[in-house]
Image 1 (cartoon, rainbow, N blue to C red):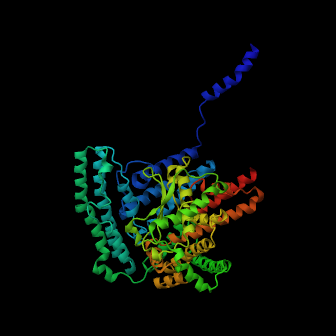
Image 2: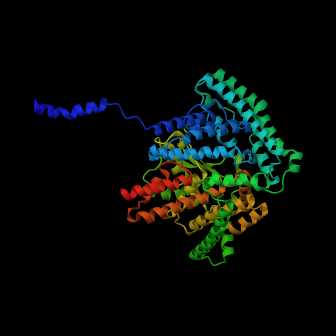
Image 3: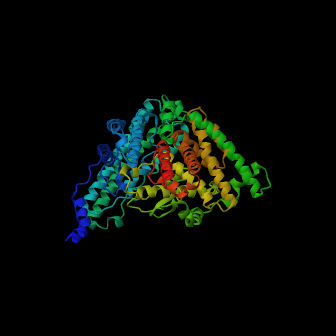
Length: 587
C-alpha cells in the first residue's frame, strides 16, 4: 500500500495544481490591459486601416475635420492621464514597452492638435486619398446583399470626407496658410486624377467582384455606383481641386516654400522634427549633422571612383553615373527585373543574419499612374488580409530621367532585409498588442530600412562596384535631406537654393529633385529626416552592443532584439536594447 501511494503522489500533486486557481495578474498589468483595450477599441472605431489589417468590415470613414482632431486629442489626453497612474515597476518588460510606446503615441497626438492647421492634408505624399481611403473601396469584398448597401454608404461618406478636406483648406487660407505656388499644380493634378468616368473610376465594381450576388441585384447596384460617382464623388473631388486652382487663390499663394514662413510654422516644424525622428533634436543640430555627412560621403564616392579605375575627374564620374545608358531601363518590366535580381542574391544569406523571416511573400509592381507624376520613387505597400503580398510600388514613368544606379540599395531598403522583413514580422507577431502591430514611428520604420540597405553590404548584396557607388549615392540623397529639409523649413532657404544644393551633392535627376524638394518643404516637412537619424541610432546601438558584449555578441540575436518587439520610438528602443544587453551578459 505504501509503495502504491508513493507511485500515485506525483499524479495527485498534478491534479491539485490543476485545480488551484491561477494567480491574479498584478494590478498594474490589469490597469494597463484595460487602457490598451480602450485604445484599440477606439482605433477600430476611428481608423479604417486598423480594420483592414484585421480583416474586419469597414463601416465608417475617419472624421478629417478640425473638430474631429479636437475630439481625438481629448480622448488621448484622458487616456494618457490614466496611463500615468500605472505603476511601471509592476510590469513585465514587454508590458513596460507597451506602456512607453502608448504614452509616446498619445503624446504625439495631443501635441499635434496645436499644429494641425499648419499641415497640408491634400498633398500627394500626405493626402489620405491613396491610403487608407481608396484601399477601403478597391479591396472591398462583396459576400452578401448587405455589403452592397454598406459600399454605397461608404461612397457617400467619402464625398463628405473630401468636403471636410476642402473646408480645412479654406480655414487654412483664412489663417494665411496657403499652398506655395510651386505646389498648386501637383496638388490640383493629383486630386483631379481621381475624377474619372463611372466605368474607369476606382469606385467601379466589376461583375467578377459581385459573383456572390444575385445578377439582377448586382446590375442594379452597379447602376447606383455609377450615379454616385457622377453626382456625388466626382463633384466633391472637383470642388476640392477647384479651391487651390482658383485665380484668387493662386494670386495670393506664396512664392516661398517651407513651413517656417507661416504664423506658428517654426513651432509646428520643430514638433514634426521630434515626432518623425522620435528624438529630442533641434533642426539646427540635424542641419549640422547633414552637412558633415554629405562631405564624408562625397569623399567616399571619390574613393569608389578610384577603386573602379575611372579615368576622369570626380565631376566626370558623377556625370557618367547619371547619364550612362547602362544605368537606365527601357521598360517598366525591365525596372522590375533589375529590382528583383539583387534580392535573389541576398535570399540565401538571410538565415546567417536573422533568427526569423516573414511568411508573407513579396515582389515589385508599378505605381498607379495618378501617383507617378508627383512622386519621386514609390513606396512599400504592406500585406493585408485581402492581399497577402507585400510589394514595392515603383515609378515606371519617364524612365530616361530615372537612373537605376541605386536600384540594389533601394530594393534592399524596401523589401528584404528592409521594410518587408520588419513590417511583416511585426504584423505576424501575435504576441504583440494589436495597436503595436499597426504602429510605425517614422524613424524606426525608415531607420531600419536604411540600416538594412547598409547591412546588405555585409550580406554580399553589392557584388558590382557600381552597386556600391549606387549605395553611396542613395546615402547621399538621404543625408542631403538633413540639410535641405531643415534649410527650407527652419532656415528660410528658397526652393532654388535647395535644388542647387541637391544638384551639387547628389546624383538625382532634375525631375527627381523637383518632386523631392516639394515633398520636404510642403508635403511632409520633417519626415525625410527620419531615415538617416533612425539609421544612425540603430548603428549606434549595434556598436554599443558589440563593444559591451564582445565575443558574446550575436548579430542575429541583436537584430531580433531590435525588430522582434515591433516598431517603437528610438528613445524607447535605446532603453530596450540596453535591457537586452544586460540579459545577454547574464545568458
